[in-house]
Length: 459
Image (cartoon, rainbow, N blue to C red; front, side, top):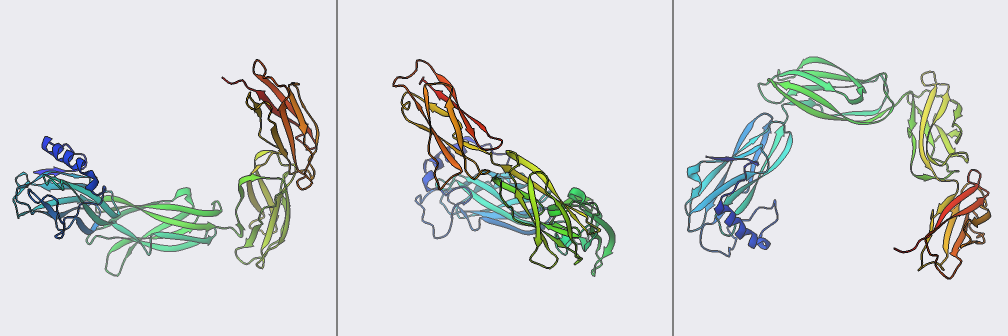
């Protein structure tokens, strides 16, 4: 008996010869996964010898349950004038096993042979699609791929739907009830436990019986009191035991958790580098129980200026934040504290994460010369967003071999200035020369800007 899975792929010498012949004519073969057409209308280039034919190359097992071993079958027919030899059977997954008696490997002309395919549903759920391969001595089509497909049903189900919506719910709110029943007739749901990431939900269970007399477990969820507010996108794992066999089902949960005051968005975060003076989109504070409140004060900290205004809907208050000139260069993480007169939510916190642009940006950050470019000017660009007009009060290089020239400012771009560097001599230096361009500006916090300069000999 031949019973092979994906780990058993050893080929005989005759099979290797057949595969070599197949490789020679590979341009005529379809890509992996397509299989080969063996239809009644197909015109073969080789008219003699064994000819493998499959009436159907899809083995559909339909709906099956977990922890079952399902058998399917497929027929291979020999439409040639010589014996067809089934040389090997293989699959892409250990869950799928092809079985054939040793005495049935030879199919005479104009006869057919049944191949049994076993599929194990352990640890599988939902739509399944596996490839199995039949190797024969058919000179033109030595390899045929078949598809085994099925839909593995869970041994228990969560009703009314495997999804728990959290639409603007608050801590302590009670959510809908869910029922868990076995799906296989005559089976019993013996135990159930639920894993909730972050402990955002609490649950209570009780024994229930449906209209058909099937015993199950009812689950009622509620939002935990001590929970972090904001958006939720997670999965709960239902772990159950049905007739002594364990299984798990993942149930999605998505939405948002809000307090007495809803905050949208819950944080300010910029994916791009941020300039000082930027005004961020407003953060809206909205009562969730139609209980009006007032904002008593806003503390934006040292780097953010804050203001409030009436929102679009009744009861809404918009908080607008502006990054001020005192913000340091680079990543900035801070928190805005809003104090309200709401007794259940007197403090609202708004996290802020931004990357602040340098006070004076320099591009490029170094100037390099060589023999081919020593008489060409290297231009350094400076820009600052915290002054109305950028001034370069002095510019010098500590090596006299480099000439420095400050270009006149453009009236259309007063915050941008340019400095040009040039090698002053007609001859290259005998060795590498390093220097520093020193610039004095009117930008507070970036009064002194330093740019490395180098004359680099090739090689």
